[in-house]
Image (cartoon, rainbow, N blue to C red; front, side):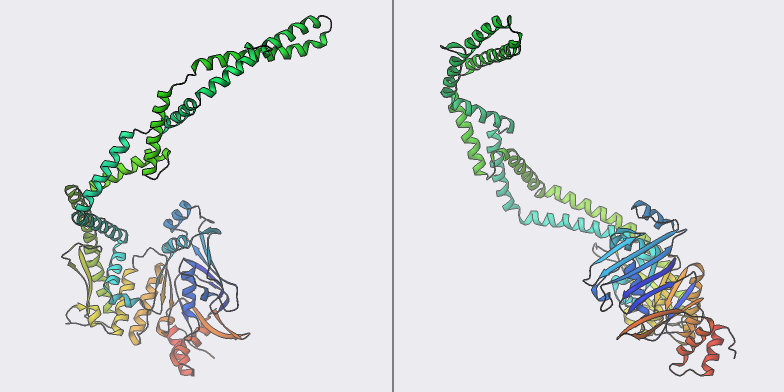
Length: 555
């Protein structure tokens, strides 16, 4: 449950920390005092939209922190652990900071996170019902969403939409194949010719490097031979060649070392040099034996290079990329063959439709079961909301064509009083009936809600008299099993709460700020008296307020 809500510089709230506990609590106050701002702040804390306008005028940033006791709420514990966002045992802290520029930062248990992660966590913890929620009752999409949420079928409905999209894509591919078959035939012929040309070229990246090396050697064979022979002449075969000269020097020094050992290192060095020179001579002779001027082979290699370079220029790629070019052309031809194979496309479309039909069938079964249950629950709730004899029904009408929303149209029907026939909500319900029907739906659908905290933002608008007292008892009953918070203008609702906060505005330093205080029993009497009597509060009004609270006013 929500244990505390901390707000700083948010809209007209400068500093606020609201401590909450289990049960049914209400927030009351004059219109415009900032009651709904508290709900807006909570929405921001659990990943809702953040805007620059939320930062209090003249401040650099706004900050909202929501603290929850998550003991026993196992799904959120598993989620936090899986995303390395866990905090202290049994505690979860969601924090949002909004800059005056509109940028925001999110934190979960002190760890930086995304707004989406705040939102996903918040879905385990809080369920918020707004004062305009009854507007969704007027829209087919809203009615369908209410049923799917109640049925726990949101993920299944998403799968139906995805499968419908896949089926439509397959059907569109069939249509495109028929319309573009002639153009595709020409492209396929061109691709086949290009592929044949590159396959006949037989380009191999590894051989291409060898071909270039062969060309360099063959094109300069005469120069290589001349250079090798000249080097051999200087090293070992000509007058004054280096190798015989080195041998002579070594022989001379060897006779000298007998008389002075200090020449030994010099002699060793020269001997090593002579060995290296000898090895070089052997290597050059072997190299020379492999050199030969071969004009025919040179012409062959040059023809190969011209063919490769010409193909690369034709297909506008580097020679090294010719293999990748061939692969790309082959893949394109295969895709065209598949795309314009009528039999394969028809088979794919039929398979996609069968998948949609199977998933949509599962959704229909779940919806049918939930529709019966929801109809019963809402009808029962209507009896206590000044709609005696009224009936509510969720009608599921089969659709003629496959739809992204499933096999059936979802429509809410209502008969507002005994004997009234069932008709679409959007056509027969008045504003007051819509408010009561919305409340009946909300109380019926939250009965099995997983979220431990329920928030109602003036959902009792348009309700009064004895119905208001019933609404208060309904909300209080919900508060027995979980935490329920309600913003209300109805004294009958406020009187049955176990916790009561008053929201008010005050002027401070040329600005207006909103404050919240938890009321004691005498303060609750005054506040409920204000809600009953308006500006002027009389002793009679106070006695009435005290009677509603179940306390006797003294003094």
